[in-house]
Image (cartoon, rainbow over all chains, first blue to last red; front, side, top):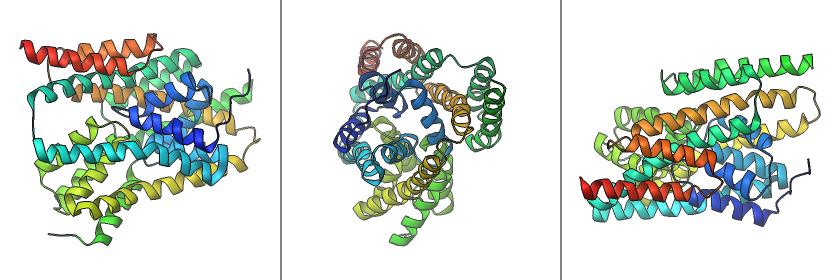
Length: 182
Length: 176
């Protein structure tokens, strides 16, 4: 496997600008598409591992991800480039939306369009999880863990803090046990 | 009831460290604090602003910026944004540093690999939760499923799925 390209600060800024500006319905699916598929800065496994860490820390998942990935590339400058790029466009867009909302209220056509977009955006998260899962081919106990975590969070609505506190260490323990034996 | 700038900054900084799992997981806690405990926003304003932040691209955590604007104008927005982002970012920075210093320890890669099921499970779950929240009309779950299939099986830009969903939404409105 070749070493992935390490982006410069400018590339980090632009890459995360793209992720932030396009990321309707949460940034996780877009980040995977930009960083793994289109730019090739990270491998599938690299991405999933760093994302796992970003998700168990408090704060916006891809915001944490940008801090950690930026630091790995270029230290503080890298973190600031990635985080700045990530938040710049969404901040302006959300402000423009609030101003427009205060001005125009509810237009039924825009409302209908946005509801369709919201439904499609939900499918994106699901599709990205399926794509990563099938490419990574996790060992059987991890597949069980993925299904259990999905069911706990989506079906039983167990608070995420509990899932992470209890199943996080269980998953890490299983991975360490497997690594020890091989 | 107008909060001081320091109140706004500290409240959102505290929320920042509670946001395990991102902004969608934080919304019940944000509602409890901003609406029920502090009384800075009423129920209707809170839910409308939250939906608005969801509809915008980018991290849903920016719902905090929008709330800040409703609470304290432009200054409130700036303080809420700084408050919700800074503590979490500092923590992520520190953890990234530990990772670097531990590089080479035999257990660090398998331990990180162990977090993959957590990442994928939560990603899948947020798809189901968002899909349920977005099921405003009968066709919506089919749009969600179709979009999931498109993202999974195709390498084209996800924007096609969003555009297609929006157009189907318009179509349902025009016909129904």
